[in-house]
Amino acid sequence: MAKTAPNSLARRNRNLMMSLAGIVCGMTGLAYASVPLYDLFCKATGFGGTPQRAAENKSVVGNREMRVTFNTDLGAGMPWHFSPEVRSMEVRTGVTYKALFIAENPTNETVTGSATFNVSPDVFGQYFVKVQCFCFDKQVLKPGERVEMPVVFFLDPKLEEDPYLSRLGDVTLAYTFFKVPNADSDQVVGGVGKEAQPAQAGQGGGS
Image (cartoon, rainbow, N blue to C red; front, side, top):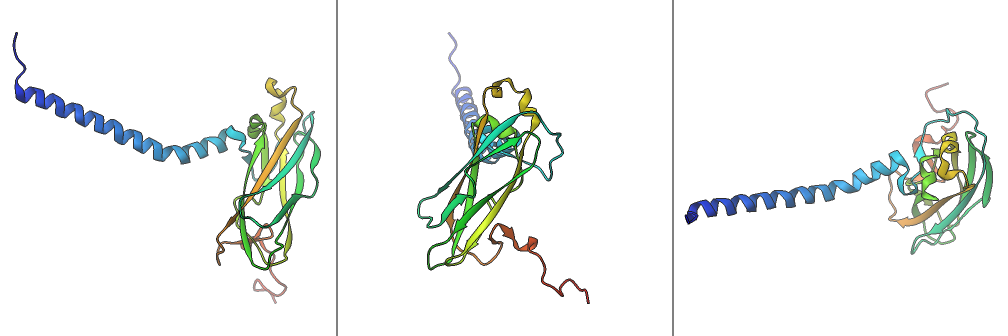
């Protein structure tokens, strides 16, 4: 039986090591890419209870009546008071609604917060569409300040075609506010960004 030449064996071992190294590098790159890809996937499909976003409601009025319940929570170390104006709302698919959330800073210090959100049951995420929301924007409240933050939303009438939702008539929109470091730029006060705040009289170049 012919013996394998030493240099041939070494070459095969080297090729094997290079292949394994390539696999490891590929898996590492996929791991780093998976977070933003997963985030995009959730936003596009509603997976994990992620609501959709739209500039306006272009859908037709649907036929189903449903109840939307609002839930609020605070992350560890967040001293605010945070609650919805109303705990639930009866809605019809395809109709635009506005809900108000109230935040208050009872401390003697300026506190900055940012909210995350989700919809449950998760399957409703692909049909719950938000037109306006304070989520992920930095909200800055001065000592004792209280603000109302609006959320404008609608339920896509396409949910009426989903057989899985035929027996589900309740959906929950939940927000959690977390404390974040105070900053001087790109902040939002009371749910309205600086760029969206109305100009004072006499501004804008007019006489």
